[in-house]
Amino acid sequence: MTDLNFQRVSAQIVATLTRILGPRRLSLAEEAAQDALVKALQLWPHEGTPSNPSAWLTQVAKNRALDLIRREQRLVEIDGDPAAIADQNRPLASRLPDTRDPSAAARLRGEAAPLADDELAMMFLACHPMLSREARVALTLKTVCGFGVREIARAFLSTEDAIAQRLVRAKRQLRDADVAFELTSADYPARLESVLDVLYLLFNEGYAAHTGDDLVRAELCREAIRLGELLAAAGPKICAEGAPAVHALLALMHLQAARLPARVGGDDDQVLLRLAEQDRLLWDTAAIASGLQHLDAASAGDRLTVYHLEAGIASCHAVAARYQDTNWADIVDLYDSLIAIKPTPIVALNRAIAVSRLRGPRAGLAAVDAIAGDPLLARYYLLHATIGDLALECGDRDRAADGFTAALACECSEPERRFLERRLRAVAT
Amino acid sequence: MAQFTLMLREDGKVFEKFSPAEFQAIIARYGAWRDELQRNGKFAGGHKLRDHEGRTMRRNGGGKVVVTDGPFTEGKEVIGGLFVIEASSYDEAVAIGQGCPHLDYGSIEVREVEVTRRP
Image 1: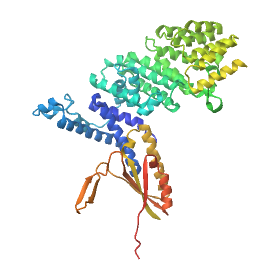
Image 2: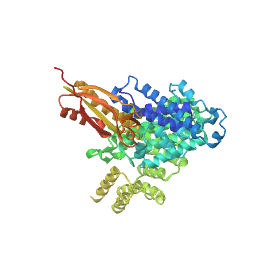
Image 3: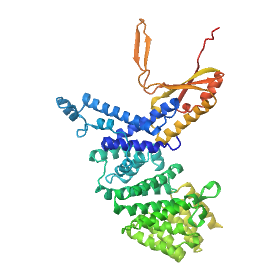
Image 4: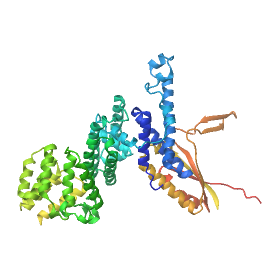
């Protein structure tokens, strides 16, 4: 039972049933998968774990789906819509809710085996561009990653009700639009961007020490990388021109994840360490190697994406043996290119920090001052913390203290708060 | 050694909201509890009782047998299954029951199987 993973199995069941029954019955597929897990919990403690648990769960879910479909069809027969009742002479099939597809149950009986591409297709369904970003993220976590509603709520500091409603709405949208499960090669390029966007968001949410539960956040990073690898392995089947962007995103995620073990320190690992303070021997060299490999593969195309540039920046850090070896000139160049295609205040702030490393704290402070008026940054702790850091380097203790105090007034996580308090104390001494 | 049954009562709805990861963790806890008993030779069997098919039979005031669907009443704890264990005393059986993860999701009734010793 060692490599049995309920999240994987449950997601696989949902994907397979959704392929067989169609995305209109996604909720039914989820219900059947959930019921199979309930059955396992009720039976296995008494009878022991079956020899092939995944096959057991899949079979039970399939049977349950058949029951649910029969019940659905009986309900239509009994209290169905008035039009169907008025026309009792029509054949049963045409009175079923899914009139185009009267044979769902028959296909379900005939087909059992999960297909390797089910998970991939499910990912593209959950990330359908018609859905809002939040809905795509929630639906991906629920159906592709096998998260529960409570776990999704915990990862995004939201309530279970809000997440549950978001999921219901998203599934209704997919049903109303009658989206197909299988994608044609023409669909892939347009949909891939939306999928990558969701993976990027999942990873960043997991990586940022901002919100939510630690364990769940680490899982978000792992899942984003796993799904990215799944895309990369599917490679040209999805779309040849999209492959470099997939590799670029994977490079970015691996290179960032490599630094995770070194990011905290101090008593009980409760202090957030900056790049300059991290013990680089703790960086995960295998993850760095994977990252650089993907970055290499990413250079195949002629399209430069945000992922390429951000992965490039991450690689500059990853290959520097010591902080003082960092190639800041390259990093500033990459930020200049990045800001051209992603002109956000956060990118501008990070560019300003890189400028301060290359041309000194005064140049950095000038770059920060140029963007400090942006309303999006006003409540962002990192803006004020950066002003504090750079002012301190310029010898301006008063401005530094003001910066850290302003940063502490912003919303931030506990490790970030401790970090800022430490900086504020450093100003005073 | 005597045999005891641990009758597991639960509200059928209690498990509906769990996530796949939670299901896996809970099943692993039951498995560990059961393995431990098996290692010590104290596990004698277990049965899951089928849901939603139980019927209760009893005589009414006039002596007629009345069969009612049930015993399920929404939201009420019902016996979902039982374990049979070996223990040297009722206290030991209770102690074993206390280690059962089921207590987090329902209640356990411990009953000794009475055996008439033939002369």
